Amino acid sequence: MLTIPGRKGCLCDGPTRRELLRVGSVGLFGLNLANFFQWQKALGASRLEGAQGFNSAKSVILVFLQGGPSHIDIWDPKPDAPTSVRGEFKPINTNVSGIQLSETMPMLAQQMDKCTLIRSMSYTPTGLFNHTAAIYQMLTGYPPDKVSPSGQLEPPSPADFPTAGSHISKLKPPSEPVLPFVEMPRPLQESSVIGKGGAAGFLGKAYDPYRLYQDPNQPIQLEDLTLRKDVPQERLQERFAMLKGINGSMPDLEKALKDYAIDEYYGKAFDLVLSGKAREAFDLSQEPDKVRERYGRTTFGQGLLLSRRLIQAGTRFVQMNWPAVANGNPEVDAWDTHAANFGPLRNLHCPVFDRGISALIEDLSQRGMFKDTLLVTVGEFGRSPRLGVSTSGNTNSPDGRDHWPYCYTALVAGAGMHVGRVYGASDQTASSPKEKPVHPNDLLATVYYSLGIDPDMTVLNHLNQPRELVKGKPVLELW
Image (cartoon, rainbow, N blue to C red; front, side, top):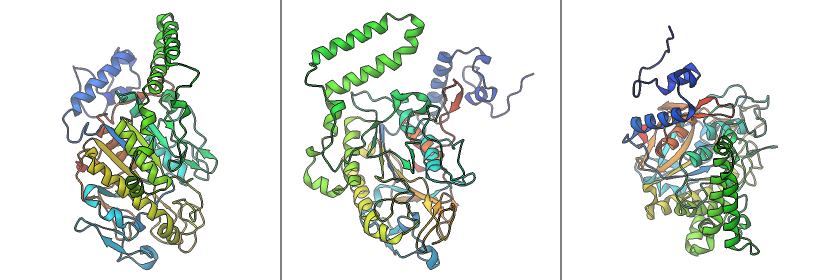
């Protein structure tokens, strides 16, 4: 007798999704893949439809602060902690009674009534940890399977788990001829490992992000979204019709394999070029100077403004990366403040971040876009509460902070979530969660859930093996 352990449950007298995964074979129950995914979709919809917060968002802006910003020096100050922990910055009041931020964030302090701080982000890494491994986990929902002694990963591979935006592009494609997933203004990077956790992986390159690796504070070049002058629209339409005809002449099986990779992929590219809607979204010159100044005439500020414009145009997922490599020079642009923490935060990082993120929150709120837009702002980890210590094998200056995944902060807003509050709490030194810990995978599951995607659904990897979309649970108390 075959016994499948776990929670009981069924749909139409069939096995649960988790039971299928435990058995490890779809075919064991007589289901072909098409029937399996139809069944799974019906199960997810019937189970979650109408649930609190489910399908509350149409689009997502992920502001990814690569490098690991110091939570204690930005949005979780600890004024009563020892000097070696609290650092140089003083807390300030916000426009929400009882919530304080660091003095480095005066503009965000006036927008706290529109967002929520999750001060209990936390995970415990396996062995040494570094940026690449943490980024991969944060964006794919899976821990890395191969970590070098330095804590770094191998370069991107077609077998990687897909980044969140790629899954969303496939599961929730936009209805308009716009780019479904845009990443800017530079790839995620640590040393020579570039783009890990930032690609479609086993979903295939058709679901890679549109990578705008340019400075939004400078004129943007979009030749790939522009119809060449020597190719009239009519000729392009003829070429696309010919391509579809060739595909139609394929044998049924081959056509089934090619349909999505060619017809839909090229069809979307065709519509993008002809519609011009995507190009218009990138045109920041259409914005008043007053708005552009509010965001800040910086790469980060103008990137956030561009993120808003893309979402307005119908893009489903925008990932705005902090425009610096993860282990860059903190005196110039990186959040990775081993060598110096307070000077760079005071003079560079926080003024740019504070102006940009407060402007985006204010702008989305005034335009009524928070009704169906989810904003998530987070890094791959925080920084060590104690100054000058080594927690990841790195060397730190007396006023430097090392990597710290055990407790840090994320900011969320929109999609019907409660605002003007703090979810979870850290202990007296911001070293670990005091209550309601949130794993990065839980935050990612919350993103999927808000878009009407069942986080428990399964996807097939490059070996046609079923895998959970993300190994996490949505934080339902945010709604």
